[in-house]
Image (cartoon, rainbow, N blue to C red; front, side, top):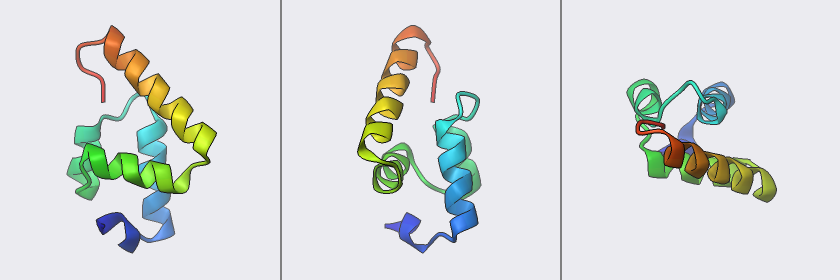
Length: 70
Protein backbone atom coordinates (compact mmCIF):
# COMPACT_ATOMS: atom_id res chain seq x y z
CA UNK A 1 0.00 0.00 0.00
CA UNK A 2 0.98 3.64 -0.36
CA UNK A 3 1.55 4.28 3.34
CA UNK A 4 4.52 1.91 3.44
CA UNK A 5 6.50 4.43 1.38
CA UNK A 6 5.95 7.36 3.75
CA UNK A 7 8.80 8.97 5.64
CA UNK A 8 8.52 9.02 9.45
CA UNK A 9 7.60 12.73 9.61
CA UNK A 10 4.70 12.32 7.18
CA UNK A 11 3.58 9.15 8.93
CA UNK A 12 3.57 10.99 12.25
CA UNK A 13 1.57 13.85 10.76
CA UNK A 14 -1.07 11.47 9.36
CA UNK A 15 -1.36 9.66 12.71
CA UNK A 16 -1.66 12.98 14.54
CA UNK A 17 -4.38 14.15 12.13
CA UNK A 18 -6.27 10.86 12.46
CA UNK A 19 -6.16 11.05 16.27
CA UNK A 20 -7.33 14.66 16.25
CA UNK A 21 -11.04 15.41 16.54
CA UNK A 22 -10.52 18.47 14.36
CA UNK A 23 -9.19 16.76 11.22
CA UNK A 24 -11.41 14.79 8.89
CA UNK A 25 -10.59 11.92 6.57
CA UNK A 26 -11.25 14.34 3.70
CA UNK A 27 -8.47 16.61 4.94
CA UNK A 28 -6.10 13.66 5.21
CA UNK A 29 -7.03 12.60 1.66
CA UNK A 30 -6.43 16.15 0.36
CA UNK A 31 -3.03 16.52 2.01
CA UNK A 32 -1.67 12.97 1.74
CA UNK A 33 -3.84 11.07 -0.75
CA UNK A 34 -4.95 8.36 1.69
CA UNK A 35 -8.59 7.35 1.98
CA UNK A 36 -10.36 6.27 5.17
CA UNK A 37 -9.62 2.57 4.69
CA UNK A 38 -5.93 3.28 4.11
CA UNK A 39 -5.77 5.53 7.18
CA UNK A 40 -7.40 2.82 9.29
CA UNK A 41 -4.90 0.25 8.01
CA UNK A 42 -2.02 2.64 8.72
CA UNK A 43 -3.32 3.25 12.24
CA UNK A 44 -3.75 -0.48 12.86
CA UNK A 45 -0.16 -1.10 11.78
CA UNK A 46 1.37 1.74 13.81
CA UNK A 47 -0.64 1.85 17.03
CA UNK A 48 -0.76 -0.68 19.82
CA UNK A 49 -3.79 -2.96 19.57
CA UNK A 50 -5.56 -1.38 22.54
CA UNK A 51 -4.88 2.14 21.28
CA UNK A 52 -6.24 1.25 17.85
CA UNK A 53 -9.42 -0.24 19.36
CA UNK A 54 -9.92 2.84 21.55
CA UNK A 55 -9.48 5.13 18.53
CA UNK A 56 -12.01 3.14 16.46
CA UNK A 57 -14.46 3.10 19.37
CA UNK A 58 -14.12 6.88 19.70
CA UNK A 59 -14.68 7.35 15.95
CA UNK A 60 -17.85 5.26 16.04
CA UNK A 61 -19.16 7.08 19.12
CA UNK A 62 -18.61 10.50 17.57
CA UNK A 63 -20.06 9.41 14.23
CA UNK A 64 -23.21 8.22 16.00
CA UNK A 65 -23.63 11.61 17.70
CA UNK A 66 -22.74 13.90 14.77
CA UNK A 67 -23.83 14.00 11.15
CA UNK A 68 -20.42 14.88 9.76
CA UNK A 69 -17.46 13.46 11.64
CA UNK A 70 -14.31 12.14 10.01
